[in-house]
Length: 429
Image (tube, rainbow, N blue to C red; front, top):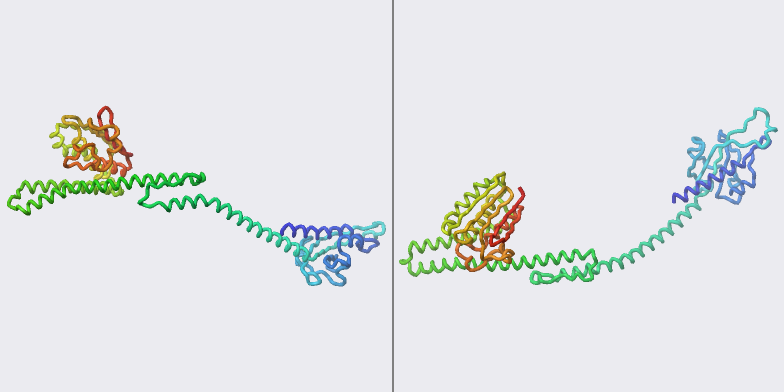
């Protein structure tokens, strides 16, 4: 639109300049060649184009034949600027576009001019009907609209076809995902035919399904093992209670002490399960400053009786430094690591404990372990053999250590070298 309007203004100005170039004073009379007027489009048969030349006082000097006896409406800026464009109303009531400029006509024969006479300053006003331009603009707008609508419809059609084809792999992947349920975790998504953009998503979902299947199997195994571990002390308590009920006279202090021992084991198992669940859920009492050497010495003293009964010597090496941790989880880590080493190391052997502000290492001989056992060492309720099912050890200790270490932002790993088992827990200072 802007280009067409600019071109229209240029045409109006060109007509005015053609008239100015053809204007002259001949024998003291102002005139414009009629042939030039007709050529510029201002003949009597051209009602759409008009011009009017006025003196500086506004009195008309000459007008186009198309005006007959009418005058052009004077634009608001006509007397304010030497040249300009403005929309006006034409004599026949139609909208028009006007251009004006000031000029001084040339003198045809200066010898005929009286000495001292100066050609007057004149102002030309040219106007053309805007109807043709507006019709052209409407036509252009219609063509653009029709072309635009056609292009949009075509684009929508192409887009629907392209998007439909592009969404087919996604729809197939969605259907595969919807077929998955908790009872069919062995199902895996087919990656054949998937585009590269979805291949990674499918692979990641398969990886997640694999991890879920392993987790569900582990939880199922854990539930079964937990039920088994709880069943044994409960069965013992039931038998003792029934015996005490049937033969109350024969119920002795020793029987009561045995029941308390069983209850202690049951309470310890429940506390361990609770601590394991709390660690895996990420619940903490908060980080506090802990005296590294003192806490380890205290735990070793607690295990001293069991160690002395088996002839176990515990060596402690501590690199002091500022240390902060969750006090409950820290006691669970050192208690289970030292307790396991004292319980399962060969009699009359050495347990080494090394600690610094960012790591803890507990090392003992383990002749009955193999490297293949290391993968299952941190599984809940796992034991190498029946000998590891003695009272006071449920097979949860290293699981608690592993879960607590991960919650504290660290890691726990096991290694077996030359018959020596090393459990190392590391964390950021």
